[in-house]
Image (tube, rainbow, N blue to C red; front, side, top):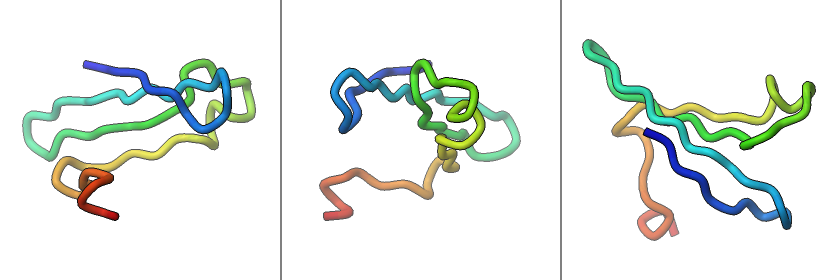
Length: 59
């Protein structure tokens, strides 16, 4: 399952890709929707399920 949301830069989109795992926590990776070659390997973040919270809770 994946969803997209607007990033802070106009025209930039970030995709959230969820990977379901059988024997470890599921993972969510946020990455640019259409990165250039340099950004493809440098602008992403992955977190295990249970290690992230909503923006409202963080604030």
